[in-house]
Length: 434
Image (tube, rainbow, N blue to C red; front, top):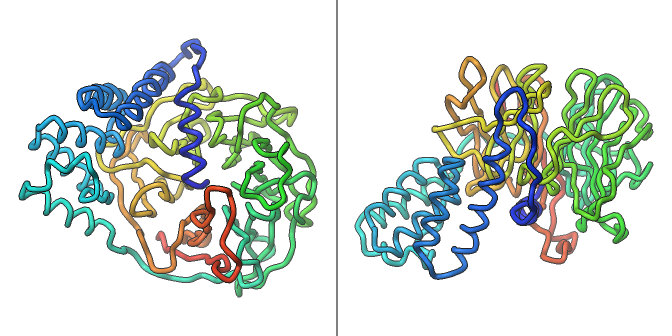
């Protein structure tokens, strides 16, 4: 899901009140998230103003609820610099540089008071060093049979037929692609009411697809923008069997990822903020986490049959107990885990596509033995030649196959793309994991 939609989702959620939720059998983070939303909205307001004390107070209040968020660290450094507390501001920037992320601090007006400090020049160099490419460059295939404006969000391996599926946001269709990159139709544009294709998962003879009405989809009807649903598609023929839509409530929605766990299908709403479940009865999409609770939930991965990890774009990783509905943050002291789009379980670890940070990265996230906190974060790849904005991925034969140039970043403010001769066909790259 593109960063611009995630930001829009966050801004909507920051202004949306959440009704109190009864406590489950296990204490969870609902109250924490509600309070955080208020404080983070205050941070954004203070950044637009000149009151450094208000910015510092709001940043401290938000950080006390959710730690290790780079945007909050940055806001705090700006406030401290404006208040003349240079040593503390530089220490905050040091902590940010240690995460491996890159910020252009030399261009930040709020940090002008630090520019004459000897440590500042070293930090500028460190942040720039954090941008350096890392990891192997291995092209799996160029999908030469697809239009340059295909805008793929997701990829899956069709193991039964030795081919790949790529879903298009721009053309509301799913194509099959062979290992040489030749493509042919699998689900025709708009078939069965299909809108922009986002997350996909395959189980047996069924392809589960999250679909959403987005302004970036060519020719979309105005009434369809903001609609979203889950589709069940025959993985052999491409026939749409059934679909389930979120009810119309006057709000924007975009189910961006799906996860199949046992007989249940889960979907995350990256704009509306809810998590939904389609149970074994297949009657309707049921609320698991109420809309607006998380700010922009994206990828999901199952730790086991009970616990699901959810990547919330602005706030990091959260652990959902599917039996009780309890939600709590997956704590980390070892790295910045915001801006994660795709999330995949692999041999007890999590593999993450982090496309909402600078640099964009692919991470291996190791958990402790109990799966209760993050133990270590390893950068497998970042900022590689051939990347644009990487989107979703799939794991096949011990490797991560990922869309390296989704070209979400090429849309302008009016959801329009450059001419076709300025775009590239979808590029799929491979990253060995074992």
